[in-house]
Length: 178
Image 1 (cartoon, rainbow, N blue to C red):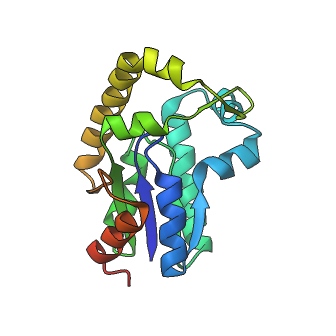
Image 2: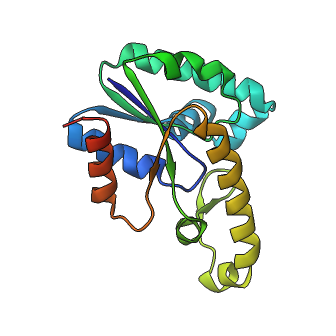
């Protein structure tokens, strides 16, 4: 079985994916980590493939190769804007795809920022709070875009108000993984 976790940035795909993989004994792949390893940084990947459609097609090729290499795997994906290259995944009975969602307020609490070299930046909470309305607007816009895009293709799993263990349990129950 292959499990693909979709969702917007800062939603928690990697954290949930890693915990899920550990619980069910699957391999785990974090797409962003693989991209950074191959291209040096996420910016390096974007510089080499500056067209979003081209990047999304390349990501689909990466996923295809990982699926062929791994019998049982959970893959946390970078946000995907163009889903036409992913149709085979949605139609394959051996692949589970879901969109991880949460409320904007919860995502705001998890925001992380990096520099051009993918080093984590410490942004003071006072600064974030001062600009909260801006960030909340941007988070909600991303959520609306990605959730609307993904809703026509896959189920959603809501994280709202749940512990990580509860979310993993919900996924396991929904897809009969344990």
